[in-house]
Length: 440
Image (cartoon, rainbow, N blue to C red; front, side):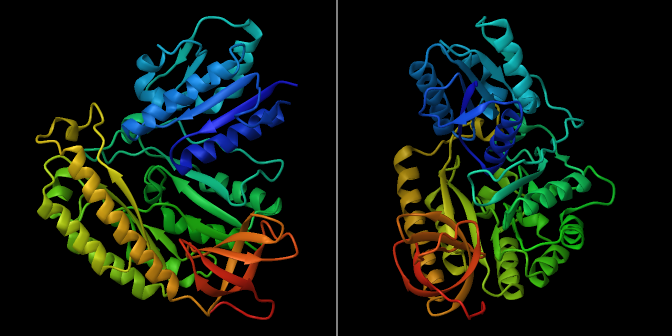
């Protein structure tokens, strides 16, 4: 049996695409092994959103080549789509497959194996609007407790700092029938939480007649029976309209967690980024959503050190986040991406200033996270049990994105159970199982 190992870098979309590829290889009779094991084929699903992602992608390719020089080493994904020429210089790499052909990987590997080890093959072409996301039904429960469904791919916003539109192409939505078929499949094989994800999730349906994310959600709940909950991945501020907010607020099967990227709290920087909203719009959106959805957790992406950013711009960002009910922050230091508009702006911000600003926001984020978690102590909460940490210790996730540690003599992984939160710890709260209680 041919052994294949995967390593995935980057976003949730990359992760779900890797899971789909694993399923395709399993159906063809391959054995999936850990990346650190000896394999016949190594697949590195690359990321290029920052220079750090590029470096990690190259490092993992070289690690695979070194681990087994006789293996077929394959690099796929965003890093390949925009950096194929650079990656092609890595000795020992056999296949470079961009995002257009990523879904065809099992056939490409089979063809390469049939030919024997030959010269490097590169398959990278521009992505077209007709390159719709594939549908893949699972035959078994994969190792992740939560399932991910990619409902769309691509982005055409072209924010000044972002390489993603060049790596992912235009917006392409999966048909609602195929989305629903995938969710039915996942519920039937036992998944209790399904995450709807995409490169630009809130743009779902812009290329489909009379469809949008709100209509998709309503169709899912009308057509998919069973005990499950839906979590939405990142939604851009301008796409979280009143209709969608009402659906989220009124449907208990939608998790009370919204990831709404901010990027900057400075109107000047937001305009330069091409973000199409200002700080007041973002403020009112979060406050409105918090009022409509009691107990909701709001998380956000923030970039520090964007070109021309001054201390006054950073302070605007800090002050805005500080006044809002934000639960968690993903803080990124600006990284030059060749080919984007921001790469040509001057002055570029020095690394010392980037680090200082990043540390301040990280600390603010930790404070706000502790404040959010503390308010739930003593309350009952429904949680999805994700991991077993030792003989009796389990880690679970609430619908509003709180990690909870609790003890159980029974293996409850993959199940939704009730807990009462007892105390706040570092980044987590501790709880205890509650048999006869309901969520507040």
